[in-house]
Length: 460
Image (tube, rainbow, N blue to C red):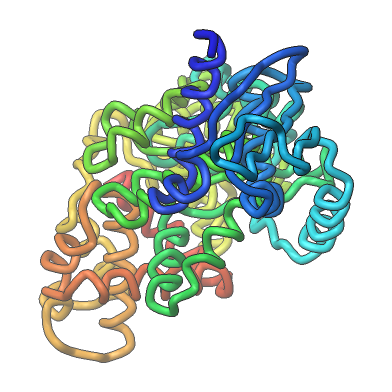
């Protein structure tokens, strides 16, 4: 056996071992012997016709994509089946199979895939597109990479890992990628999901003993977009499932896109093998927007909403609110709410009242205490009542809203949030976050209220 053949097959085995269980590997792959690599075709020896049929039925995609990754496009695969262990003569099962052109399997999979495409809800946020994503120096690299991925999914930057502080536009950008891919490549299965929901689905699959269905579903995705991947840090079971999903999709040329509030190197509680894979493609940071970008974001938002703000108000907001895109949009909502309620025009005086003068404006860091106080004051509820066992509707709403905002704005575990807000457990915090998320999706008035609360948090 020549050295090249040894090297080729060893590389293939390393990839296969990463994508199957130890038991599957030892049963079906460990005893395969590479015989020859000639004319861009690899010939392997298997011990029986049954093994050949099993590999073809269950692992032809894995073998095909592995050979493509190790050797290149267009590689063929042939089998030599030894029916007599004392002989090296090819048995009657000796035949050539080209994994990428296997008519029965390909046609069946194509039909299954076409049917599945119609049933899949991509869960993309349709309002987030490239058309309304304002570009500036702080996001230019990420924007350029995102457009490249949308044009050629799986062929440029894979994975694409975008990180940055909360509210700088990560969610907008990755949804824009997904929407553009669906427009350009409607045959592809695109899924956008938060890491938190992924973790919930994984836990549910274990509890209800349908983990295999969970894995099969995610391994069928062509474009997997996961928001806030840092949410699975410290969760070894969820990380292990995602590791195998990542390997399968990447091996098969499927596109992976992830966001995080920090770079891969800063992801504490994440397995090293995952961090390594996050770095395989392109890691791009979205920084906080500079002054000119903040002005352009404000103009874009105001124009989209059919509003009119004086230019001096736009400049004032941009100069005094510099934390995130979300903060800028929250200020616009707050200005309009005050303008409508008080029946007055949006002017510099109103902006000054809401944001505060530059000499007076000292931004206090957001903390659990500040969040609880701000929410309680907004709903006119005694702060001390939050830590009681009261189930009054208004107190429960304040408590749940505070938990939601703490989870959103602070780098704290659900357990710590629960300890500091109402002395509740982590399950209560998760339930609170889910309840508030549902309210945001279904209650327009509450969305407006939360925007005002967040504006107060940022400007107080």
